[in-house]
Image 1 (cartoon, rainbow over the protein chains, first blue to last red):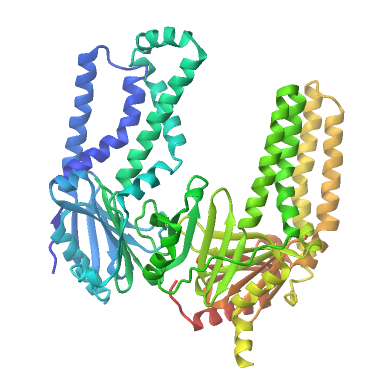
Image 2 (cartoon, each protein chain N blue to C red):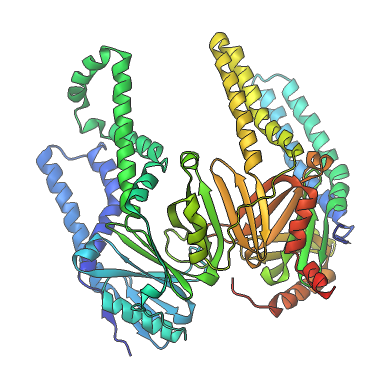
Length: 482
Length: 157
């Protein structure tokens, strides 16, 4: 019913780019910065274009040698320039199909289709990417596969106005990008790259002016640093804006459909029954402004990137919109704020855990640099304040079929987990905890890169017992009998 | 209310043997230090200290830890859930609902085999839980029972 097919020729271009992406770093190391680089600008250029041409030839050959067939309940991929490889995937083993559109695909009005099988975190599972096919072809493959799997084909043209749609507002996109705290990474990355190019860019000449400028005072150096920081901050912000622009969440009958991206569009379909947990996080920058990020954990390998099955549902929403939105988009979850806190005696343990670190640290500082080291006493005050915050933030709540756990690592997290999605519940009682009738409670859920754990430390033993009673299947049965 | 089953008493022997074998490593390090101190100019007290440490560790690993560990290891397999308790200083009690269990393995290393014991490993989609050192026959029964109970209610992950 399906003949063996080739991809659209544009795949040759994406193949070329992929090859180039693979060799650019080794190329730079060996031929640009390395000892064996060719002399002179001309030979550099010649060499470089030679490599590009070679990659292009490989790209074309790869496109020529790649065919796919869909037949008799099997998906067959043949590829390989010198060594022919065949890969069969049983259609009923296919877990998810993801359609994405990169820049090259956009130019030719094509899409790329990613076929994934079960076990998203096992690297040896087969997985196939059809780099460039027409949208109609992708739809055809999708519908054949879903028909084979005897699933109800989700109508793409389904009237979406019946279902709620959420769109990330422009203003919030910018606030989100600006408060993400990813500046540090970009800054250090930029610094590393700039240092690499020492040989190419005549820093001496560039900096000669700056040096005399810098010589005139520490203030100028600081100004320069600040400028660099602001630049990397802007770069980080722009990157995030691109990635999360046009973020929408669409609710269908059984699925949530997430899309995002300005240049590279991503679409992700998550069936409701695959959702494992909802996490709401507030980092310290966003918390004072009442902004929250909502994540979804879900099972099954779908392409949120690198087999990771955690995705941002709402990048940034105001606290007062939260409940309404979540009720609308996530039925079966209750979003009451956790209201059962920790007993006061737990605070001593929270404080102690912070002070074990901060007191010796500040003692050493004072001892080493006497008068100035006294400033490190501030560290102790901050650590006590931090302990108090963490103590205040830890809370739990049981509502019908959901367990909500709130705690602070650096950001404040609230997990909401349905009873049937908790894989295991662990209750710890440490030596010192037992004397104070305190316990820690750990709920484990599935997440892409290993289990995700929601942990509340030092809650009252009676409370821990209550949560256990709620979770335990056997005891629940007895209660019903009574 | 603790889980009611203890693991096999023979586990003490198993842990003694494995503890002893493991502490040979420490004796090896101490012996190495003697040789090094003969060749290089290393103060005498270092190898002596290492020997004392190795001795103390061996005594603890062979005579003290195994019986303590046995006392704290408990498990119970009920109709719809499995409860496991372990740990001395931090007591960890884990509750796994039967319907969450994906598969059950029994494992047996050479030392366990010599004493006719096996360990049972219970895996959910996200976690793995071990019951160490129970009788071969009991382990097999447990494995069968859990697989049977776990398949009663098939649920989507």
